[in-house]
Length: 267
Image (cartoon, rainbow, N blue to C red; front, side, top):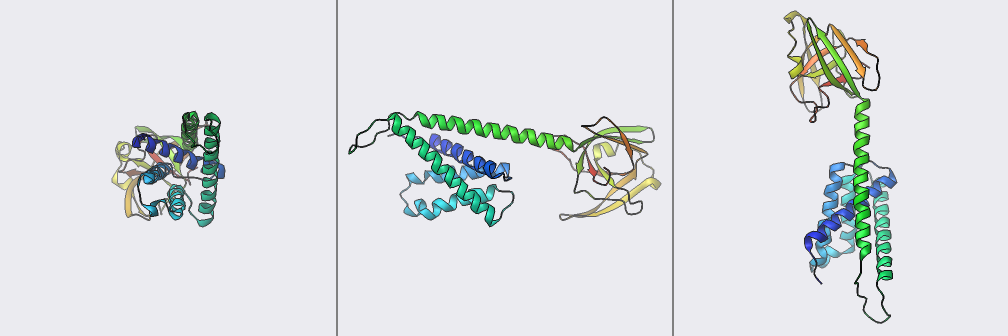
């Protein structure tokens, strides 16, 4: 019997990914979207131990430990209760899937008691793989749509006017952003320098705001906008706010979905 390692590995990765996603969906647990693919890859690679004549690799301990590691690296919130529950559900789904596949194979291949069981027809494998791939794609699409909808709810159009200059940017409501200018106690809007530098601000109107985060301590330049109007993408009404406009050297969105961060004190 010929077995192609690359196809065997790919099939194992697909089934592992299917079982992981199904486990988290059934338990309604959040998972790390990148790590779940790494976990599926780990499970697929471990499936190659059947070609190795090393007993310890195929021991019961490792067969339980590897899925536990897969679930651990995939989970958002890691605690013993959630991990244990996820591992139990993962194995239950794996046993159910194995039983369904084996029952289907038995029905498709006739055999007599006392004779060796030879698998000549195994269409169940392709059905299971098709279902798994479809489920993975649907899950990924649904997750993307949910993420897009969530982001859209927190996106705002921002008009900033200072002197004769008016700039329109997209802003994202950062609920963790509580930066305020200490003298005026006004909330801050962080804007990428590409837009911030378009304003010519007199020295007597400039503010220096110091900040302290977990990763760094520093200061940013800012000014009190003459006229600032914001509007949520889901609404049609504009409203005027008072805030300090601060510059930021870094790109705030890799996909350029927004160019500013709103403080929750503004909305």
